[in-house]
Image 1 (cartoon, helix red, strand yellow):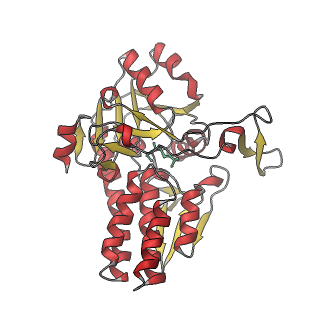
Image 2 (spheres, protein in one colour):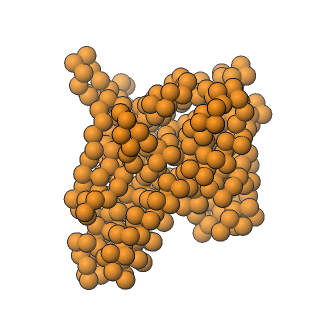
Length: 344
Ligand code: MRU
């Protein structure tokens, strides 16, 4: 991705430090956060300095490598670090995929752990690029695309999944227009997806999360493409809260509904969406909003009745029967067990 003319990845490792774009400051400030050890990297995942399935996966892989750097030969400490990393966020499969791979690699040597973590990050970039190329075959000139949350560069190491399709279509000369769900409560759509599209000069508007049915009923949406945090063996897909509602709208109005995700997001040991753990986050994310105040300072304001409680599930599961297809780096498949098992 290019930011102010310079190439960046969302997360990378340099001499044992993990560097990442500080996503909690976007789109207002662009800063790189540096983590010196696996504990700080865990904190960065938990507090969503880095977020999005692919980016969380790569960061978790780097955190595991940092644990090997710190505790080489102390298997108990390394196992504790693995448990700490895996306790940061429960839903994205990519996180566990990365800790398992880097842990096994690190049993051979520290160097091997670092190489494996870098390999996972490189594979994420390659997968995102391919997802874009396959997804582009679904897009026709002048299509209006609706997306939810942020499944772009920032949600991965580069390219993204759902937005990679948009970028590929745009780069192949098609005129596309994107409806960006604001994606409350943390507003990943309004803050991150809109920022990415703006940087890429792709026409878009931010829409309230509850505008989907209105837009669909007016014939404004040709296709919906979203990302995924974990896909079960039967094709049920967990993604940011509100995704399932969009799928219901798509089915009601006969709009194709695609999920874009790399193989690292599939959990073939998870039979169906019922077994996916849904993260519940702090109620403050619902009760307060953060933005720029009149003095150009990031500030947090209460937006609800003081004293009321909030419930904040971070993801929902879209049943496979609502999904037209899943765009992967190995091609577009149907959301069913047969096609998914054939992928592996
Ligand atoms: O809570 P987040 O921001 O880490 O949510 C994950 C997501 O970004 C989305 O659900 C996304 O569509 C998955 S693909 C990056």
